[in-house]
Length: 164
Image (cartoon, rainbow, N blue to C red; front, side, top):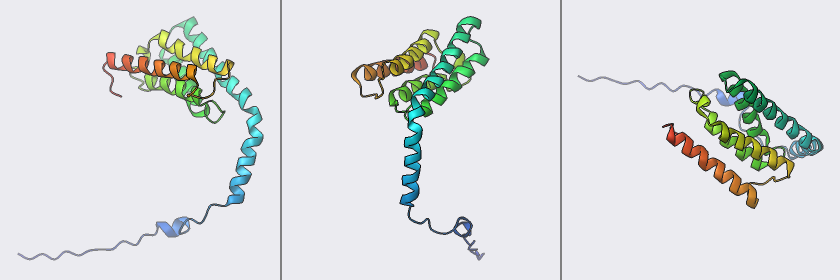
């Protein structure tokens, strides 16, 4: 039995829809964006403090009402914001510490199993980094702090049988 196969070539219309090859990056536009970011950078310290206040409020709520799904979620999302904003605001150490806390609380199914003392240690570390202007995760104290917190998170996740 002999069967013939027919090959159908489908035209690639994506290039036409997005405008063909991407041209060279517009250096003037990049320079303009960098200048705008530099202008905004004078606000970064205030904005970072606003983010820290949000995690402090979430922490206070947990202390007042207990560790509930609602306030655990609130804390997680504020920390997730800090994870994304820390480096932008000039604090890669804050990004790293917030990232460690997020890793421990990422999975909604195990979020409430996060040890309160370990949550508080992360939040205290973020506050200390901002207060003492410890920006880089290569700073001797910042590095030890971040390494230790990450190790404790890993131990916790392993202890509860959570796969990373």
